[in-house]
Image (tube, rainbow, N blue to C red; front, side, top):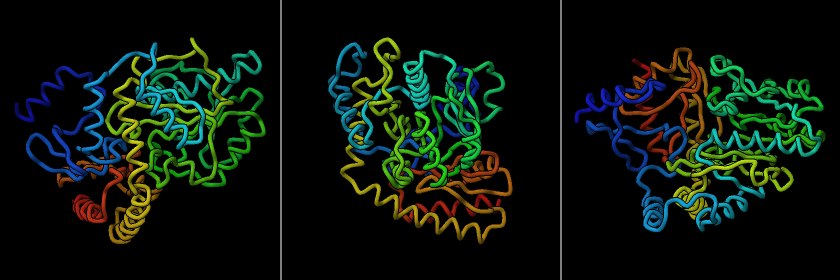
Length: 394
């Protein structure tokens, strides 16, 4: 089949919820992707911050192949070895106490919301508790996750959503304080907002919110689905702030391509008991084998040091880009999660970059998002800058 035939067939059968670009990706190697016409693309999107260790990583592939030959699925009616091992690794690395494996980041958010509400219910027996979320946040598109997503255009058509959610201004501690009541059971935020435009939280904001939660016995939920797993230069983004959450949500690079997410809790916050929550596929042996190998790669390679080094170089090059190219205003972000702020629509630039063999994505109408595999080198940064300059000049 030709590329055009693949696209036509997909458009005839798939629900049209995505405006896909007109390429059909077939294979990947390292930080490059190849389409069915043989074109090569330098990938600075990584499947939306998923492929931390790049494509066709032999160690990762072998772990999955070995597990497929053993057992893929058992359900959570039984124990399985990979899930037990992965949970042990995650609790040790995170400093949190309990793990629930899900199939996606959105499901991890659902579990975090339920955990916070059950924690509050166990304290006072009431069901009228409130959650404070942030404006311009993004937590997913299911009904619960959508309810705490701070973008009205995503929520509008699906009202009524779950109640008791208030939205504070990100990085504005007084805005948060003004919304806290005796009914507040949780505050949820991304240490680095992703879809909302690549906005890192300020240290004062993070520590201030943690203090409010400690004083009021409110659970603090960090959504690190996109910004966690080494992307900002530490294993988890919140580590750079010296602040620990009560609940942490993960996905994307947790499985490096296998659909898996998780929410982790402290022992204090682990309010869910048998019957409160469940999943058929979550934490099955294949998904857990992927998590195990990903966590092993983080521990046995120098990837976090590498992120520090290459992200510093990336930021230098982005500074130079902003100084040289008129339509580039500035950039912001942490580590290998960077946003380039333009004075023009970013969507047009994404298309032009793709035509020149570079994959980037947007984070809002005028922000280009760079979330490449963590294994990129300075040479890849140079190649990206060259291709991006050409796209911007168009």
